[in-house]
Amino acid sequence: KPKGNNNNAKKNTAGGAPPPPPILGLADLPGFGYAKLSKDAKENVEIAAERYLSARRELALGVLLVDARRVPSSDDRAVLAALYDAGVPLVVAATKSDKLTKSELGPALMKVRDGLGLPEGQPLCVSG
Image (cartoon, rainbow, N blue to C red; front, side):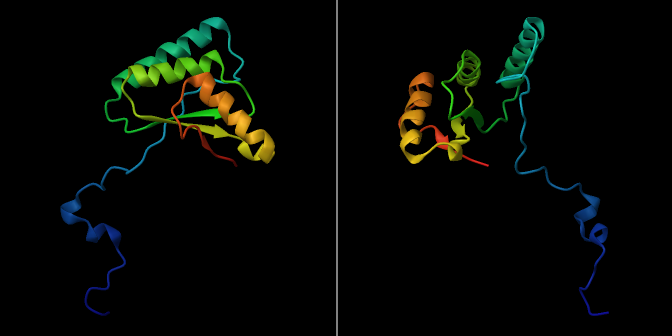
């Protein structure tokens, strides 16, 4: 076998050191949007989300997904406010933009921008 040819990955780790931490981790905060929850369950989700956001100092970016076809809801505004309050840099992504015609897209994005008080350049359009 040629020198340096080793297919055993375990032998190639430095001193058996653990692998490096992941570069990117994603966390979905369930219970927002169109989830059917009781008032108590919704309150519990909101409390848990606020705790998560305030305790996770390593959060590098929050991404709020909103439906481009809908006016932002009070839940959307609450999540946005929680991200701002936690000091998390954020971007708003307007989903389902591919479901709109070219003539519908501009006004729809303005509704999202105005409804959330976003700066110029947001929201970003994303589609599946």
